[in-house]
Image (cartoon, rainbow, N blue to C red; front, side):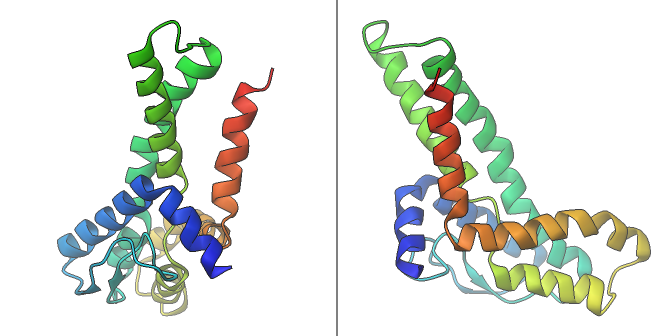
Length: 178
């Protein structure tokens, strides 16, 4: 399964690279030490960086949530722009070759960003431990973080087993089915 994960991360390298970049950027903002800054390596951390686990609730939530949010906020509009041109407006190479190529590239880059939304499992487990088990956050923070944490927890496993790649691929294909 690890080999399949690495293959899907390399196939969607723009999203995996940007996800790792945003993780690295968030860690630097929060003052978390980065142990291994390699973004695309051939192991289970492909598309993620190896960093120290946060000890405060806000930092643990930020390092788990913000990189995926940025990937979603950039990936969805790019994906939508490409898909609308190709599937909805039925743009073809005979209409405008340059716009056709840009639309294909936008769809690919947007889809790759959407395939890398979730943090590694260790980061989410640390978030759960810090915020909910050790209660290093106030009650309002725990209430606000509960649903996103559950979604990130499930999403981390979904991404680990390449289901996010399959979901994005199937949804992209379904956009072209009439």
